[in-house]
Length: 558
Image (cartoon, rainbow, N blue to C red; front, side, top):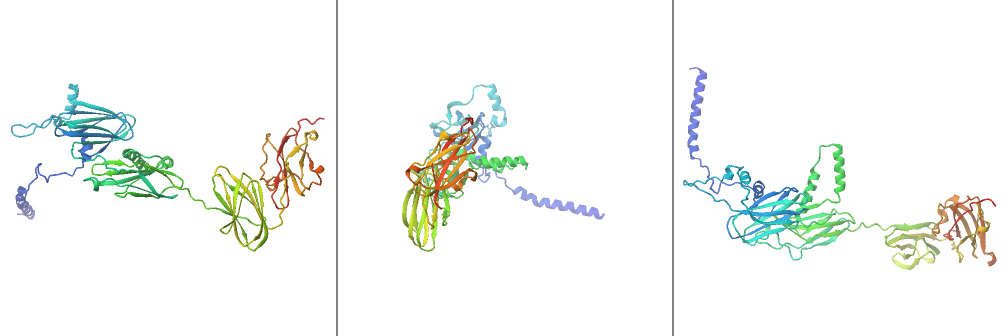
């Protein structure tokens, strides 16, 4: 016998020996029967529901409905005279739903004890053929309901059978929560809320706020399965959990959809992100905690807060009363302007601003100093402090000059109080030099002498005072005739140089010579002009006469 034949023979004998050794083990192995408790599958009730459309006992299940497309769901009542409760809770659309019932077909056994297979199981098209051949439905109609609010169908003693719920969404796609129960044990559909189901704000700032709520009432058998979930957004409060989750799911889907990387997709995504920033919902489940701090708020914004308590065991939810909260505005640092000796400063108080501080420093004791305050718009209350001590209070309506003597060293603060409804402007001057306050006459009006005015000139006159003062005349073209006066806070330094006509120092010598007359030449014919006269003395503020608007004559022929 050749070597190769011997090797083949030995391998065949070895295989036979191995087979003989494993035959006893195979004969002794026991396979579990269908009735044994150990023969189990770990199948989730919701997975079974979505495959069969049979609502599980005492468990709330969500379903998604397309507008105009009806869906059928079933609930099985095994025995007669059981209490039946079926509740439908639509989310964001009105629904129409009906409930019907039919008997459960009995199981049939042959003489050998074998169960006959239901014809519906053997032939999946039997139900469709039966419907076409027999127009009479095997179901008995029990009721029909329409609306957007949760609706309950209840029978105190229901007949056993298969109950069919047919649902149609009327307005839009929506989510509906289905719940069915036949238990006589008082199981609450929703977690029990406390008597006070409000949410309260415990603290807030410009960037965060904290809110809390009272604990849900203890429920026998469900206390360990309760969990609180909070939602914060800037658009609205959500009355139902399913409405909230519909928005949250859309938000998550939009965020996770990255596209294919095209530039137009990125642009569209940025636009959607910008548009949805205000409507973004912050949603978080926090276990058994009854307090939550939201620390991603923006200053001065309104936020809507909702709290829900979930029973994870039966998949039900109860909502606390929603609340709105507005964060504090960012506190602006109070600006402190500094007055320098001999230099004028203009302070603007915006509408709604409460106050502003202006400081000046005295580094060595002063025998005298002057603080000039000139209100350009309305009345402005002021308070002067030396350190923290209030040393003077007054209200500036037009111009006020405070002459201060024997000023000690230190920092002086002038607090200006604004107006909530109007803007305010104040011109300020602090000086240690000689100060002379200008004075306006009793009648600070400018008059036009029409009899001597021409198409290229205007003759003006105004009253003088007994003080020697500097008078400056300004002119500018006006596009339209207006009776409005120039702003009395406008200083000569703010006028254009080309508008200046002349300046002259004058004083009234006697009452007969109390009027000054001046002819303004080189004007355009048939043109509107605005004339202003300012008076001042040294470094002090200038005071303005009432402006006048006039038109040169159109005809230059005499």
